[in-house]
Length: 97
Image (tube, rainbow, N blue to C red; front, side, top):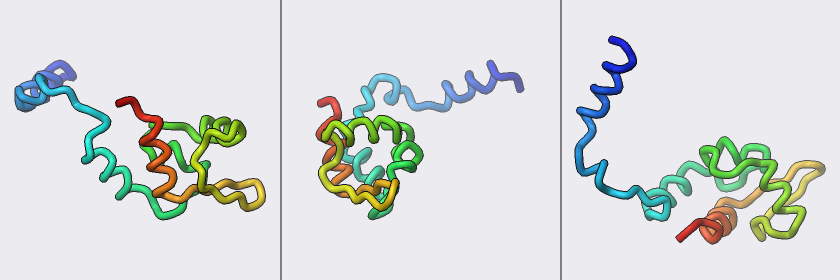
C-alpha cells in the first residue's frame, strides 16, 4: 500500500464527528493526562520531552532568568528541577483561554 492509500484509510476510519469538533487544549482531559505523565519532580533539561514539546528547556531557562518561570523550583549545582503541581499551574496560567 502506498502512502496515499494509507492516508485514505486513516481518513475513512476517522469518525466524521471528529472533523467537526474543535479540539481544545484547555480540556480537562488534556491537563489530567499531562499531570499523570509528569513525575512529582523533574529536571528542567527534561521539560521538552516530558511536556510533549509544548515548551522547551531553553525557554524555561530564559523565563526563569527573567523571574517568569514556575514559582517553585530547586537549583542543585547547575541543574534546576520543578515540582509537578507548581509547573502545571504555571503552565495552565500561560495557556490561551
